[in-house]
Length: 544
Image (cartoon, rainbow, N blue to C red):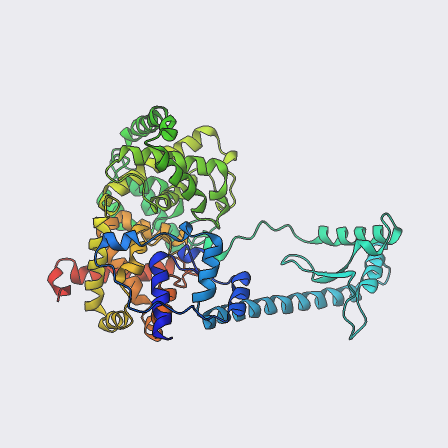
């Protein structure tokens, strides 16, 4: 890439820290056909850069003043920037993968159709009248070999229907016998297909070990669940033992009560828990009555407006979070927290931190999959309890990292600097490679600290990660640094293969974690613990 092109890329990435290709980290597939078409038309040639090297931001305030989230950019501008800047090889590689996957699906469909034909031939020769209708329909619809379909024949396909040529209704008069027969045959075929729920993209699925929809437990998992239940059943829960057991993951069945205990929301004494829950829930809804009506007041309306804009963008691929009642719950939680913490107020990114608590506490009341769960089917009292518990546990979390969100976000500044120093000691090759191509840690790690890696990992992985964060002393404020270092070095091979600024930024903002589950997170946590053991009590070891 030319130097001018490099400068152009850097100016635009400074404006949009979220990747153009992948705004929500692990939550958006990178390939967009419209974007691809624009790329082909544009020839992937960036406009010439203005002469002279742009001034680098020397302070965090300067960096922040030139930075805006991707959602601050209009859609048309975002597409135009993508068309100018994206590496065509990256896009084409993604496109080829999509095409290959589609071809494999079509081949499987053809094999299924062939098997169905063979089975039909083996059946008794006496035909059902509806089968005769189906044969007539297929005979009429297929063009002769070597011919293209006529304009009146349209090709339709669906992941869950037969790929076939469908006769246009314009070809036969409305209400004709042939049209009625075709419709009956199509309806018969459709009814024979098994019902399938809406497809949830892999990155948005939470059916992964101890989260939801799990298979039968192994003996080891059943044994761990029994240990949790024994600890929780005592009159006074041994929190140290609970932390030790929780570090390696918490079974879904006991995760809600365990998170409440480890966060400090509930007392260890079992007799006091019910009274504490009632008091805290009443206190939260007292805040709602006292403060929520002020959301449209002049001095609060900007805060509420930003919350109202951000909520629909929270986990957009998971239908649960697109329900109006869930979004109203999130608005209340975030608004009440913001006005009760004026030192920081609401900051973009805090909205993400509600979702793990909400999902975990929903599991306290349901057994089925959560992604498509309709919360309106819950009793009103249960939904209120979930809302209040989510508020208090999120508040406990933010109490430990509030300097991440106060003016100029000093907590994030310190952690990004510490991450850079740590990586320079544990993997000097990666560190030198980043500096060689002028990649600043703040350009990618700001989001890692601001959102606690929630934009980089599927939600199921975040929940597993937070099991350990709850169990680890200062997990969110201190241990997270070592997790980020281990996460960066995890992609060492891919980082060293990139040979320009653009490629590195696309990689670091679109790390391929959508297939990750508990196993990958456990390996990441083990490496982070090793780094903490080596460096946490000897900070001079990672200072040059």
